Length: 251
Image 1 (tube, rainbow, N blue to C red):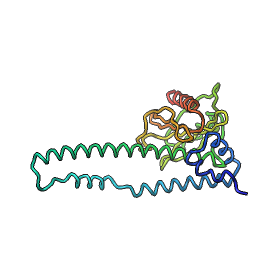
Image 2 (image 1 turned 180 degrees about the vertical axis):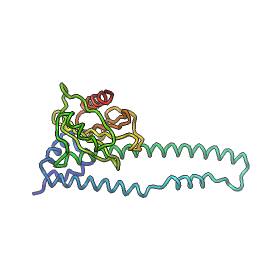
Image 3 (image 1 turned 180 degrees about the horizontal axis):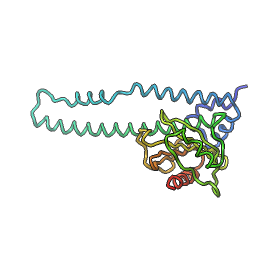
Image 4 (image 1 turned 45 degrees about the horizontal axis):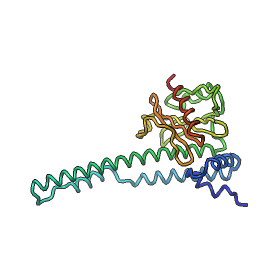
């Protein structure tokens, strides 16, 4: 008998299912080892394709050489025509460089957020999503000591709707970081923490919760650390957890 969820795995990884279907499939993956293994395989394939695509991007030196060739001085032109042409060309080049930089910046941010979503999905599909299982922040935080080149604070969750499930060490590219999982009602939220300087990526200094397909994501920088909060919970829940983490980071 064909598993009806199997046909929805690609849509699930692309974040195009409804919130209800995302929640139902999350629950299904915890009990179906075949689907969970297939999700992990497809996430790894997506990462491999991204890495392969980056290998064939034109180098900055190549782009600069093309720009220099375009801007080469014509052999026969009066100084007036050349001055006008140079001004127009400089304007076009500046607009092109700014536009290219903006597109590259947006592409890098989108790629980072996509990788974060992949980490969130693959972890929830895993049979062992955390390496340290505890609701006590005083147990989870010390577990990371010696495993990461930085420390962080966890919030006090008493009298809140959130429960700490546990954590594990993860990687964004080659950068190690902490992956913490919280639960609010029936939703699981991932919190990722990395060293800002180690990521070497231009990201928003601070952002409000954004809806990226079926996930809501918020990211900010605090005391040299980059935080990502992502899940299929409401924007309000994502923001409340982010506020608790920000308060803990300043304490």
